[in-house]
Image (cartoon, rainbow, N blue to C red; front, side, top):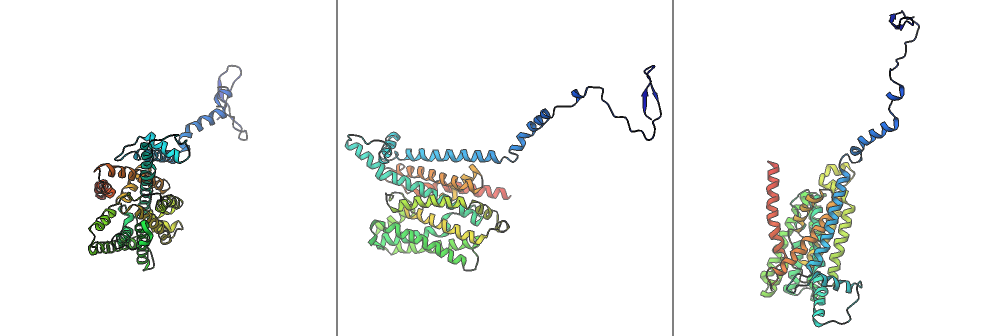
Length: 409
């Protein structure tokens, strides 16, 4: 029943409505303008309330900004450490003097009009001795770190190390043959580094041939082949040392097997190490998506249209070249490729797009300070740099194994 108002008394009385009459529209008691909100104000408030959640719902941009900041800080710390470490040694040199000498040689500052013998000696220490050594250390640290990060993704084993490919054993065999028996003596001072490089590449090719014998380069075959080849070549190196009659030569081989940057000079092997670090980092950055897929498993890689076998072969070549360049320039320096990638993951996460450059910078930073410590901890003698890296890496490895065991239980 519809109700209408009687005009005489203002009282509402029920009146029947015709069946064909339309229903009376509902009218609000308030003015229309006061009840209908402005469309612009409403949309603005709604957008304002939803904007913080919609701009970065998963925190991708915030993580990207944090990773960029971490990489920037690592780059600045590496450059500053390079400048400071050049002044550490038996003859301490101020960072300002170091920067001035480098700027003069690079043509960024005018050469002094007159110089004393002390100034000439300081310049020779910085430019001829310490700067090549520091650059070699930075390049070797970067090579080993990015190789470790890539290898851990390739074999899906967080305890994998670049030397697990047998590269270290091959390089040690080549260097021992050069030092103890004069193999390659026609190459002069380059004989040791050349034979170490050739031995490292030969070991990598042997590992690849054994792993490929079954038709597929799986992560398990790669690991087992590397371990077997490494042990075999280490036995050959020990046999060469035992067969030699030179006590000094045997001591030199043992010192080289523990790692040292004392042979770094302005030569081709410094250039090879720097190029290997730069090009290797670039190649792995371009293949970061493939490394992410390999670390997730072969099934995931196949689902993304990636061939795990071909990817492993390609990265195996890059890792072998980087490790061979590092070992030829500095000997066998352990634990860098194992420790540094884990530290980098704690800083920037597991995405290889940021993990690779973070590992390269951290590896350079770590080896710069390890070499500086090796120069001063037992003055006037120099401690092998592998002793420093092992002293730091072994406790870290124990902590890592303990955390993995606690996570599984």
